[in-house]
Length: 393
Image 1 (cartoon, rainbow, N blue to C red):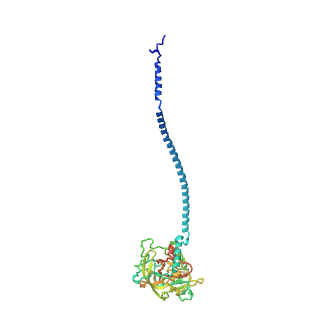
Image 2 (image 1 turned 30 degrees about the vertical axis):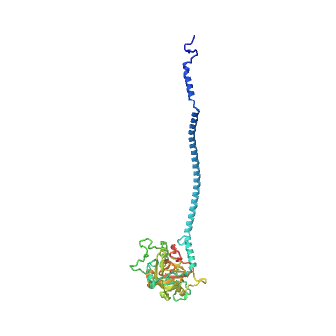
Image 3 (image 1 turned 120 degrees about the vertical axis):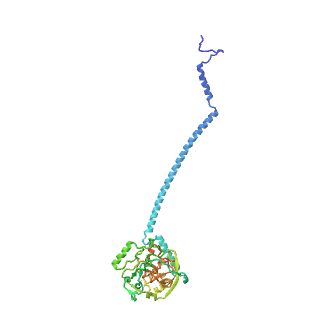
């Protein structure tokens, strides 16, 4: 008996059951989904493209990390070198600063600058031997010199009380003007006329704080103490203080009067006065040559030789200057008693001032009260404040 659930095909072959037909369909579809060689190759290339950016990014991160590490290593090395260089530079700067400021004899200038001053002075001496003449001019070009510097001139001197102290002269004890203590001489002063401003230079604004500088209080106190012990008036009250070359009490020498100086031949010069500040004027001067003064009042020998220097000072000791003896013998170095055809006035250094056209103006001391011959290099007012001691032109 035949199975009624199985249809027999008309051709007599058995027919698949209906339940098996979908599986066969799926197998057929799977066979249809099998990628071709071209599709497989395309998919492989796409997968490769996806993997390559990821690898590139990894490589880039590695390269950045390596570069950062190299920068840090280089920076660290440079930082250590920088710190070391900074430390060495700071130590060198401190040492140089200490070197500049530690020399008490540098006269307010670093030693290299002061050494250059001295070198220039030695070259000038070697080249010119203090004999080179300054230019002279016709009288028609002369003009009255402006007031330039009032140190040592703050009070008018009573001219009849003026004396020139001379120390270190040969045979001084036999001279009629010899005294045992030239420092005991009393110079008398008076207040200047109301129309004369003695508190500052005419070229300086009187409102400036620097127009009228005084010595530091410690120096003023010392000067007052000296006066209390010796009876001598305070000295060195201007900015640079008291000179280290000022005479101690009981110094013997001569007390010369003006007639003792004007007995020498009178000379006139029309030369240029040059100020270190940069201005100059042609002036008519008259007086006696310092070379003639040295002949009449010669310096005493020291170890068989003439002393090397000459020191000058105002009567109150506020202003002072030092010179080589050779430059004092220069034929144009004058002890001036007249200017522009008239006697010196008080602001210009009456009764006696110095003119030397081979030097700057700050070496041309006014109102000379002391001339001393010495073998020790003299103190100098402006040199103590940083200027050149030689001051040659």
